[in-house]
Image (cartoon, rainbow over all chains, first blue to last red; front, side, top):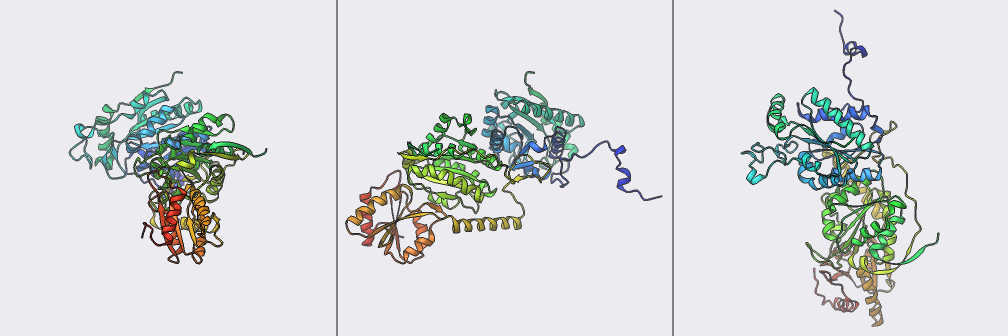
Length: 258
Length: 361
């Protein structure tokens, strides 16, 4: 039998999925099963399909996704911890025609950067805030996050999050939805094909609203952290569905009037 | 258009000069004694004339990070604050230095530490000239001594900032910020629409993506970058030193003072000369780079140098490093918002001449 190589199989007529041109060929550093890679991929597809590359400026946070600029082929600024919305504010104000987004984790957005998050949303800056909530500090090795669930164990809540001394997990999407400056607030996930499709639709809406200067769009992605949660990817997705989703229910929280 | 003459506060002069220099954005947070800068800009409303963005941020931290964002787009952006607010901005400033971005930061200094006082001081010298935040870096630091220089140094700062891709600080104080003097204003410059090759303005097909960052996890590359920064600072020290001299030709004793203290020393110098004391004054205009070479030359022919500062003795350390033991160096200062009179400066020069000054090191 003749030897078969990759090029014999990868033919246009056989393709059902193509990697977005906006994704670089750099190998992602994310742990196996982590939602970040999928969220990056969906965002890259939206940038490509909406033809945004030449007018996109992204702001990366401090956290697991600090090196996001290695994976998505658009101009990026890397912010100090929690400050991404402040950078995005200036970028958008000075260049209103650009598509501007921040990509932030829960420590970045809901702890150290709370003031920037609230006030950027309150001013109604015409930007997209993409918030990845996995309830833990992944990069620093699994410490308690502001969004860590009650009773959930982490390296700084080894007996489980005790609400009496550590406070309750904070629901940032619900908080920013109360502010008149936000036009679109939604909570999505990337653990299923259906979830990925819904996130993509949400991102496309955010692009449309930013083009229409409607105000701040805030998309939360409830995600997993197999390494930080000390679970296999499959276990972490199951745990997320059983524990995270009931506390952080998926769906639109605020939609603009048409 | 001819130059325009106006009577203005130092803070107002900075604001007006920023508009006229074609600044693209100002991001600030109110703090005494410099709130007039934000107030003036809000009232002038340059959005309607030059298109300049003026935004009151939720904190000094947010303001400096807005400056980072704007600078990363290659825009002419600035912020201003006073000592406690500048401390808050330090994180952003070191990121800006680390990402090699141009911007202007104005510090209208008040007495400290902590909340301190709202009165003028020069106690942020170390913070301004030695870095201020974490990591090895320098700002270019300009020290105005008049309302005119408050205005003139704005455009100069932007030019230096873009020439070296480095943050520039105007280190002023509450006295120069608040006092009114006549000031000649330059005509309005058009805002630049040039797209800088390194700026994040959206990636066209014709270039690689631009990344503004201060992060490098590879220590060998990071050290190379540190060397690159050092080389830049050495070049700045070679080319950008500015200072002013008064009666140094035959001076036996030299005042070294900047900003408000330099003005007081000018008067003390006249009084000293009247009494037959051959005093002179060197006023550093750039505090980084510091006029080390010139002070070292002067050290060969004076009997001593007295650094006069509104601090516990900060700049005096740079005078000592500059003269490297060639001549006697001492310090006279007031703190906590107190401003020395020419009489007390002269009195302390006389004590210094007799070797009886209080400050010893």
